[in-house]
Image (cartoon, rainbow, N blue to C red):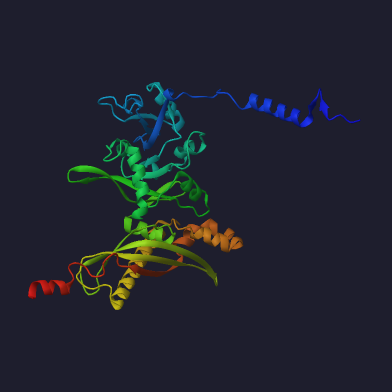
Length: 404
């Protein structure tokens, strides 16, 4: 007779007992624990090139725990700053990160880093060596926001924040806010890496700078930095940047300024929704691309006193909106072709549609892209005029108030 137990214990129960024992042995434990009071939590990092040397300077913005509110007392240390900027020089990023521990009581901890700012100077020489650590290390995250600074990157982190406690956090919020203006792309390290590894790759990143306003310096996004692989080759201004985002289908919102029909006064049109489709074509050995841009918007503000909601005037507004979007898109194409940098991913579109022919194109794609025929079609519509149709300064109202 076949036994189905051992010493009165059934096989299923025995198996469950052994599995539970194995789990208790392998899963629990704190062998690799790191106490919070031994970590310097990095909120932002900046990399600059040392002039005339093969060295870099890394600035790490670290949260100062002594300035944080105590959960027991609810108080903060008097006069304590919410962050500390540690700077050190060296030949590799990893080396510099470890050198900082020679004068910091805590070791840099990277998982909460929000922004990585690269100076324009270091980007012109190529950044592959300097981003390797942030891709390779197990503590860093690919979701960190990448920016390029006009001038010294360290100065961006040293600028006092206006509304946030940490400058790095404020910069991160500014990048998130680009969705409402679409004057520059929102680029993470993952985005940058993916574009860099494409056959026709030309990564982009928002350009950040310190601008003088009324005697004070303010942090501001000023356009888009354009790379070929890992080397900075040029920039796009905000006008060209939004044209690039229209073509790539990444415009989320923004304001288009146009003149009122029959007037020199301006109207503001709010972008509500936008998209694009790229259609590559090879015909008789000639390469071309057609980009179809669609957009929907609302009348947000008008400075003229005309009735813009009349059907014929409304149609004129839409035509002006079409022309404005087309001008932005074409300006970005012209600039990108001058830089010979395929920031739109046209090469990947050809790769997907013509995989066999792509092998003969990719070696000289920069040349093909510079001479590529790009046709842009725009179809935009205005949907609403807001809560009012006529402006408070409508011409007929002005006439009644002053002549009756």
